[in-house]
Length: 86
Image (spheres, rainbow, N blue to C red):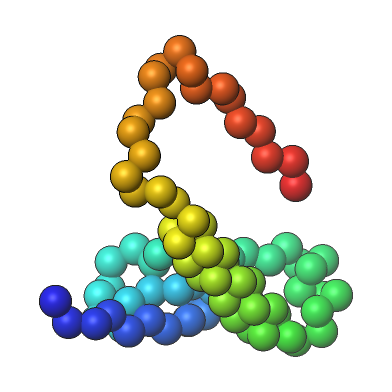
C-alpha cells in the first residue's frame, strides 16, 4: 500500500479541511470558525486550523498507541457510559 499524503485546504465556504491529496472525496476533518472567532484571530485562522489539526493527529496517535489490541471485548453489562466535559 502506498503512503498517503494529506493537505489542509480552505473550502469555498471559508472552512478548513484535511484531505488526502489524491482523493476528492469528503475531507477527513473540517474546521469551521464563527465570524466572531475569525475576528478575534485577526487573519490567523489558517494557522489556528493547522495547529488544531496537528494537535488532533497527535492525540489520535497517542490514543492508538495506548490501546491494548489483545484485550478482550468487555461484556455488554459491564460497559459504563462515559462522558466528556469540554
